Length: 139
Image (cartoon, rainbow, N blue to C red; front, side, top):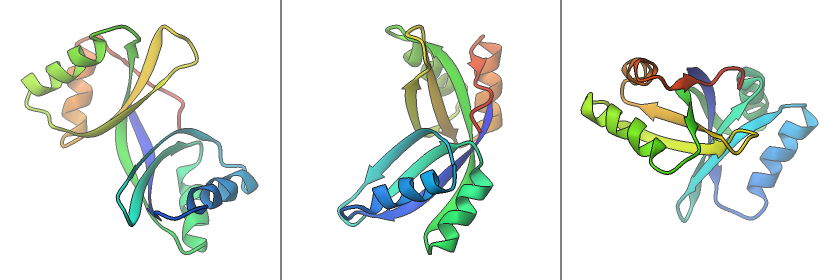
């Protein structure tokens, strides 16, 4: 379930996000998923890419700040209540979810959920033991 996620600190200004995606396009970095949270002045861009180390180097070469963070990925049935089941299991086992984001997985039957927990290893174990499938091959 472990996935290496790229986290980038970005200015909240016109064109900044397109500059980053253009850098990736020019350098053949394939973005698999992304999420952005913003404030008035800056944002936190979280990406799953095919080569996080190469993407981070490209960003740093262009003066951008970023890090690589381990997160977990889980496949969840795309139906009402399934995400709630996973989150309830984690809460019952004392695992705090710092953030998550989700995207559809090429079929209507499943969604992929990327989770950053205070204890990723425990979260991974809890979810696997409950029968949730791990995501493979994103990064």
